[in-house]
Image (cartoon, rainbow over the protein chains, first blue to last red):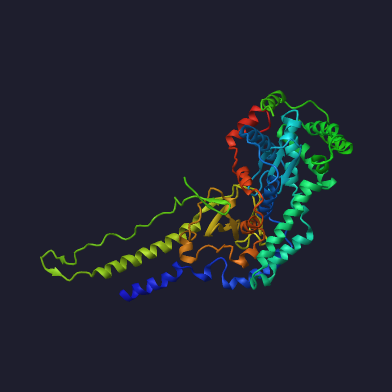
Length: 283
Length: 208
């Protein structure tokens, strides 16, 4: 009996320490995994990778602009943002949507990949009512949904990322991980330049406008609110050339397309209630 | 309930893992009196304890296998995929919609090997936010069949094979201390609960 017990315990103990052969990454699977990495070499950026890129882009923007220390305003902007995000083409992201207000009078808004959307106090103040704020946020949500931020990572760089991930050399030599950090850094630069400095392509802007109008309609906001805000910004444009006027240029051609997209009709019900709660914030 | 931070996930304490108390108390005396008053040779302590231990181990092994084979989880997050390996970098086998139910075969760290509509693959815990957090060894199966995949910054191969991960972000942060990740964490920590959002939507006459 003692021998039987000893045998049983000896058989069980190695497994308690971790049966290498049964582990997720076993020595036997290394070769097979190498093949899967090669297959993965053509894949687009994953939702989790998009999320980490977005966090770093946000960290870079937040190094310049502080957050507004007004929890009531932050809550309100999050409520309006979530009300439109849930009716967008991409209602959920890897870590969900988050909205925050930057403490600067300069009017601007940034859609970080993965769902962090930053709007300045200046742009919130430019809006006349909640529907116009919803229009701005719906436009930024559309940029996230369409992955316009991550799509600005250069193809050559992404190919290099995939090569670094797939190469068998990664299993042999240290330093590849360091290279991956450099590639990550370059990707953040690509996205940052697009959303903060140069702006999206005209086609990406038009698609975001179209999607924003559709989202506003689905959410119950006034679809004409985006056109109203663009008109207001066009009037202001004469005095401004940087910021949002460069990244989201409110041209007459763009305004005409948004007006046509929204169509004509009375504003949705309870507009007065929404305007009243917007005004109560006293931005 | 206090939680522990692990990467970007809050790991909640393991509260549902059953504890096994399968070893009955063994009598201290080692003599047995028969009805006639004769002293019968005792069953030795070590022999009895040995049998009980063997039976207990067998029950644990059978129970663990049966429990994991029957557990199901419901997908509550959108944009989830079934992967051939416990790795976001692998090419997904299929998309798994919100509301789908999967049968859990085993757990390794933050990943579950599941059966979804007849296809076996891996899903990340993000698909089931309310699922039990992994223990250090990935639960009892992990204890018996091996722990979770080692993920450390020193593991260059793991880093290189997974693309942009929390570890890559950590290295980037070290390289750029001027960036404000503390504010990003603050933005992410802000949450609007569903009831609050529904009330806001209703009050504003928006579409539910």
